[in-house]
Image (cartoon, rainbow, N blue to C red; front, side, top):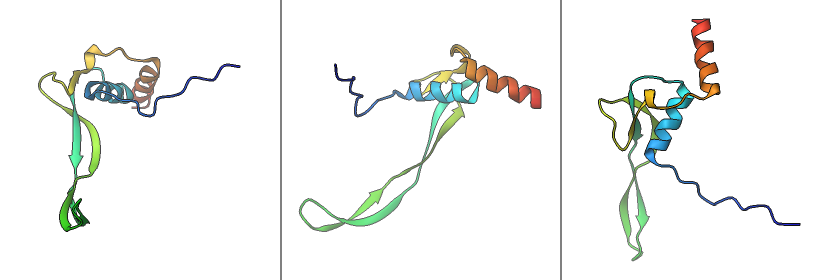
Length: 99
């Protein structure tokens, strides 16, 4: 019996692919939307490679999202250019019916 295919350890996405997926998930059909990232900042003392303790900045990603932007770029997509999936259409239809 042949072995099943092995899934890759990491699956990479471009920023545009992330924006497109978020646009589809939200059912957006118009406007230019760009990737929004909110960072936090923190500090700790960590031993460096030489063993000396050094103040170190930590910069966690706090939020990911979409924001309206004026032009299409490497991190922005025109929602009108994306084909709406049946799931997104159903979600949009439900929102209109209940409003």
